Length: 212
Length: 212
DNA sequence: GGGCACGCTAAGCGCTCGCTCACCCTTGCC
DNA sequence: GGCAAGGGTGAGCGAGCGCTTAGCGTGCCC
Image (cartoon, rainbow over the protein chains, first blue to last red):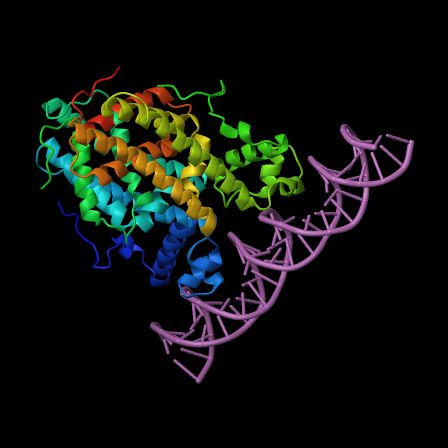
């Protein structure tokens, strides 16, 4: 049910692996700026400023502005995939694993709304090569969820007429959390995760769809 | 079940009301450009070029680039609201009306993916006043869907523990269609609409969740 | 058929963009 | 203490941005 390594700050931080400290600060500043204003509306001066550096400093660590977006997108997708894999490969019935996958995936999108927004909505801002790489990661994300649903159908737990379509809808539902979720809103990430897990179990026709 | 006035072109066109012909051409060009590249990445020269005019021509019909976005957003939201109202105020059980609302709302997002993308994802690019107006329209959209769900709960057709949360999820699911739907993909807007209506009926615990 | 309002264009203003370059501090090795 | 290496800066480049302005062609009214 838990998915490890989160700070008290509320935001998951997979950025520990970004090694030169200045490079990590720049990446974090870029995530914030991209999420707030979008990739194209963000200036390199703004990113450098948020990181407390001069505009030129950015180009010591990254070749272009797009490289920043690419790095953010890849790290974010890998983290998302990791979350789903953990839930998918866990023990338990398909029902339990689907609920776990959805609730932790949703929690990630809600808590790390900043990161998730960039990851999910700025795909088109990448060049062809970078985009192709990210699309590959997305296919793996899709396969992971589809796998759980297929397991449930095979075991008789689920009743799903259109497995690919339902997979798409489940992922779509989770991803869109990054668009509307508001940290100052009435719901905590945990509450949204629980609500969505319940809704998804209903979508796949699972027998038991009750809250914890 | 039908929502009137669509061209054979596949894209709904509520733009008939935009009266000077050149202004309509510019608006349509702007919708295309904004959807493809995002508001901030679109140049006024690009918009004018698509409409077959010089860059300066744009400013005869619109005061700023933002006014174009505002107009598009308002017309789009009014159309979306109109679709939901038609379904909501129709005759039939809550189950039938919810299915109708979802399927027609989804069809609109799929068919007019270009428009819907701009309408749903460029809200933050608007200035405070324009944004406030659009947010008001969104609240009406939300109220329309919540109304149907409440009707269903009252009549005993639905079993929904969290009505506001479920309303949010249903709308979120429909809106996100604009993000992933691909005209060249394997599904027609009608198929997605039918699939989603079924999924939503499952989400609200409606008794009969079968295709037509 | 003269005047004029209107739709439009060519040229360009002031500004900011992504990115570069010449140079400057610190740090660590000998 | 000398000095190379690397992270950092200030100034600025060419380009492209949103938007303005002066002027041109056309059609309608009298």
